[in-house]
Length: 247
Ligand code: FPP
Image 1 (cartoon, rainbow, N blue to C red):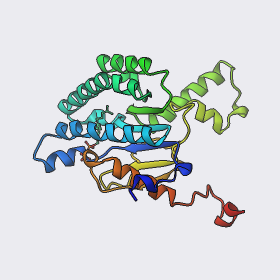
Image 2: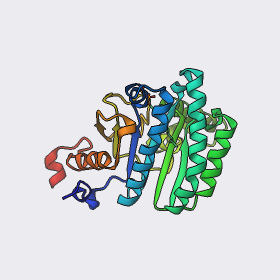
Image 3: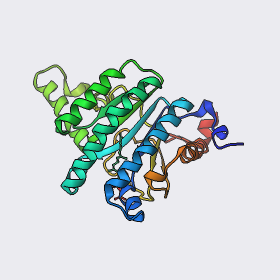
């Protein structure tokens, strides 16, 4: 029985979020510059997107560039942005062919203009696709997102379109950049690091976390299947007892 066949289609996560980590270390192991690792990471992006679409996972969110990544050496930031623009422009046709919608979350206005425009164009061109949604987190951090949500809510209170007593969890959820997207049931992080690193802090409240030592450029469909199988063996209690779940 192949790994893919071991996946129970009736217990598939709707949304899987991924921290793609280890590109730099992978490049070092290959005696190359860091950007070589990012370039090879694109193949893994294709693999998981394709695997998600084939399995019927409705949302995949990839942490492609964090707010903190702006502090990396400028040459790496520029090379990474060029890689993103290039990849997005050449992959739009494939996304359409496979009925995959592209979305992006984060402080998108802080991206270089060409990157921002390429992204908006790809989002527009794929907006009617329905099979799977690929969400790129770009210039994203959860603290930025939560701060932004608080600002939006405060403005509504200031102009009296919202009253403080009516604020509940849904108010917060609907002001995040992920509004309308279900919470990830599973979060995968590669490269052996066991951290959330300012990624989807609100949305991951009840997610199952899966860590693998594989470096991102080595991550393939089989690794993705393994993570899903591991998830399917977990008991998700949401604060209840095991007995309550059975009854
Ligand atoms: C983390 O590895 C990876 C990134 C900061 C960038 C990930 C981006 C890509 C794989 C390109 C994606 C392209 C698209 C279209 C989504 P790291 O550099 O932190 O590795 P290290 O921890 O080994 O140094």
